[in-house]
Length: 200
Image 1 (tube, rainbow, N blue to C red):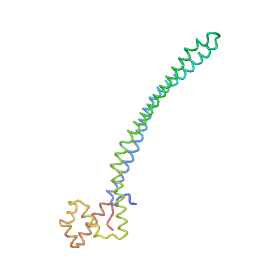
Image 2: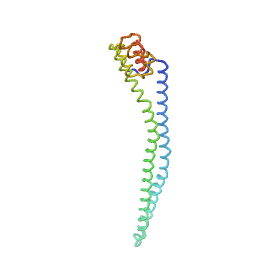
Image 3: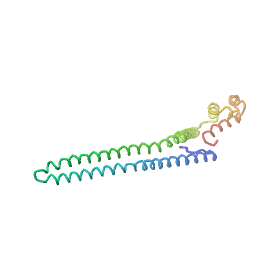
């Protein structure tokens, strides 16, 4: 597998792009975690509400139990406290619901903050890098298998920009058809350079 170009300037650009992309991805992940942590702190109110509800329920249940032990009137006196203890359950349940909603929001925002720049980076950096690696690796394998200059020159004529080909020779196609070895060699070098491989 060929990861980088044989040409120093191109290789330096590739390495710089790799470093920048990795830094962007790392910073995006850190920012996502920070946003998640910050938003998730809002669940503190839900935890406090849940704890207050549980404490209220326990207190009302305890008072109701104590008053329930009073002879003759105990069951009548304890009934309102038993009802009030269910209000504590409602408060605790509301606190749990608030925590769940905050957690969902924190996860969604954290992922959103991290995912968008990561996806953009992968689209703008990873896809071209993978395309380069694929072309360079395949071309190097073909060279080792005996790919000759004529086929490389033909690939240059079909893949490279017309202005770039014209710099080699104004009538590069005609020269290639005539078998001009110098033009063929330069076209082959042009194609190899585009995939980051030096002419052997």
